[in-house]
Amino acid sequence: MTEYLFLFHSTVGVVRMRKALQAAGATFRVKDIPRQLRGGCGLCIYLSCEPGEEQKWILPGHTATLFRVAGDDYQLLAQFPQQA
Image (cartoon, rainbow, N blue to C red; front, side, top):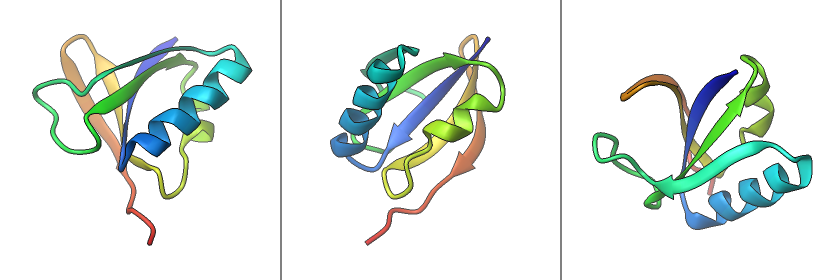
């Protein structure tokens, strides 16, 4: 399993993803955004899943950034625009 960090454009994205992850029985945590990362709504979701599965949890218009977590390091995987 690999841990991923999702940042969102607003708290609406956090709530939508949390509900979807709960319904799927996924292992995740909602936390404050780590100090070394900036942006988003102030909250983030850590998700543990097999590599490749993280892609299905990207919410177009809501997900801002996706990172792979390695200890205290965050590897930027993708950034997504906010849709109007």
